[in-house]
Amino acid sequence: MYALCDGNNFFVSCERVFDSSLEGKPVIVLSNNDGCAIARSNEAKTLGIKMGANYFEIENLVKKHNVQVFSTNYVLYADMSIRMKGLLSRFCPDVEDYSIDEAFLDFTGFDKIDLRKHCLEMARTVKQGIGIPVSIGVAPTKTLAKIANKFAKKRGCLTMMRWPHIFWGGLYKSSKPSFHKTKTCL
Ligand SMILES: [Mg+2]
Image 1 (cartoon, helix red, strand yellow):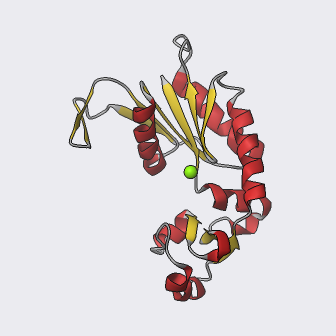
Image 2 (cartoon, protein in one colour; image 1 turned 30 degrees about the vertical axis):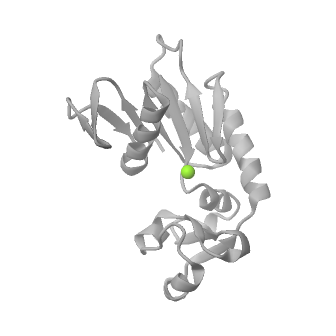
């Protein structure tokens, strides 16, 4: 089984680690030169701020709702990324960097371990250790783990997908409606 572990709203979450007053508020992080929104808190998403939205197009929305705006701080995000992946490596010897806020974990040989508990503990450890909330998708392949991660983001913190499942034209269907389990762990 593979897991894809992904830091939620990663750049925003990094900013929140150092300023807890940002919790519960709409927050966005802008791209280089403050051109467009590249990270949004859930509150900012709820306001309708889209990924990649040009700042000049959302400026009125930002002012109206007092959205907290940050320029990118890649030094900080890279440091937090290293810390996050260091914590993940406590739970799996094979951690593969996928992006600044994502890593695949190869759980081959973990047959005797309760992966659900293991992954929930991993998510708790990351949250408690560095303050970053994560979503984890677990599945038999990396591609499916990525899809499971999408479910995890929407439904809680962990989604486990198991065979059998069928792909039709990019749409996911399952022969069993209860093919995935999600647990809120944080
Ligand atoms: Mg992410």
